[in-house]
Image 1 (cartoon, protein in one colour):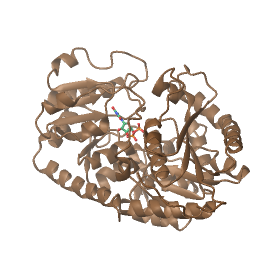
Image 2 (tube, rainbow, N blue to C red):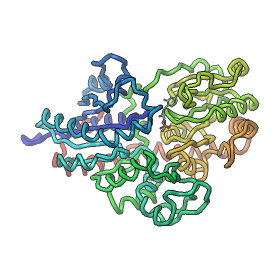
Image 3 (cartoon, rainbow, N blue to C red):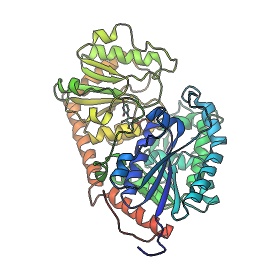
Length: 481
Ligand code: UDP
């Protein structure tokens, strides 16, 4: 190591949601395995959710024991710990938009002061609206990490084109083909993200997204938790404008397997014994992710659909699945009626469940992590997107890759259709075989991308080399865990 060598130091700030935190944690570990020093920053309330009042608890103690230099700290979002950020989500994000940048600014200044012998740079979730402004102020290289598909990124990146063509905001009831976006062959307006269809431009998402995507246009590097082969045209088109690197699925990167620990925000129910008692492919797994909410009526139709279908199932019903705080989300007597073949739990280790041989299908809200985890486990999906990026992700799963079916083709959800779709996925002869065949193919693409010569590994290495060159850090020996 030369005398002037100063190790690169990433200050990483994740968005406070499970689907964003997990890829961030894994990116931190992967970068640390390439000799980066990491300071991983969680919001204080996320730390409290993970560890309760144990202030000294450390998210990365295991990784540090294995020799990685990952430091862990917290930052306040300005709200009391007990403030219900889900219930008051608009108020929360208004303040995050207005006041949080100053907190980050102060935090960065302090961190830089306390570590004068490191070469600092910033990594933040693309949804944050301050990354480039703060990076510019402190003359820092900045990396924007996008945890959803490149298709969704591209749509938000080209808001100006959508606006020019009358597709932002887009009327919810129109069905027009959009074929003018670079790298996007064609997408129906009905498959746009839900926030692009909000006619009220003053909603909080409509304030955050345009601002965040103005910022990302000045990012030094953009990382995507996707796979080049699955979205090659979109990524190539984006690459003509800025350096984009598809490095996914980061949660399954091979060199993480040894150290990865559970960073789940909720307590997990153990369903292994129950699953092991069921025959292969006989169980439907149902989950709507970590935060999206739905109505009691939807829950009822799914419950009655499950009853009619007679299939085995594990259903993750979070206490906040229905916004009202109603404790009796499921129909009266439902749990008794499905005893023995249905398990209802508040949260689980989803990857462990999906990879159990008993599971044959996944009824999903189409969160991007859930899709990647399903493909990784070779499980076909029934799609019921609710909002945000989920309708757009559904298009990839059902229309493009043909590894899933729709729960309802437009219109409202009804129990008979639910039962029919579930039965056809779990025990139907031909359609299920075709879906499984396609999932296997996409699964192969994911596996290859993470192989030593795979596109995601190569892209990651290229990113690391280009980043180090830009940071002027040279190439110190690379240690791998
Ligand atoms: N998840 C989990 N246990 C559950 C339900 C979900 O660990 O019972 C995890 C799931 O594995 C995924 C994340 O929560 O990694 C949800 O992310 P996704 O992008 O699918 O949806 P979001 O929560 O962002 O809507």
